[in-house]
Length: 238
Image (cartoon, rainbow, N blue to C red; front, side, top):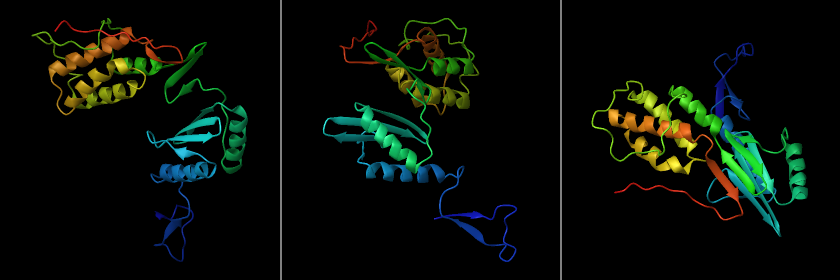
């Protein structure tokens, strides 16, 4: 149950100390996203969807040879499948229950660019990566060829900005979201995230190197195709 103070202009003069018992969550309250998720989820389950075991925000619909996938993030929804006819029927039912707006084919979802080609899809976060470089004031830095070095130089330059714990955590948090389409930086981000409480000049140096690597690989992303996937890797001598 959710209660709130009487809003200004609607106070009860007879009972000024009473509070309001909400029958449904109001937009902006911390309970609202949870209530919306529960309401939308229950309706999807009534339509035949089931929860994905890997992600509670992903719903699956399998019936005969029809396979549909619906991903929900607060009030943003990504819907795809192999039957446009069934998808249209479900969207019609959803529109009767909720106020929805169909935006057509997906080109951008939660900061992830979706590009279509003859072989499949290409997911990237070029704009998001550029914004991280802007935040770190490294938009015009020189790029490097790999995201990490095993032997930092003995005399490390002092970078007061990147060694600031608050700013360091901000950049690492942004980089963690970037790993969704950039598995090549996952190890480096994981390594640097272990020192967010007290980053040293060495960690600041490695973070800056990672950002310089991202500068030269802004067009990297995650291909999704039926063809064989070719991976490129690098290895240090030792």
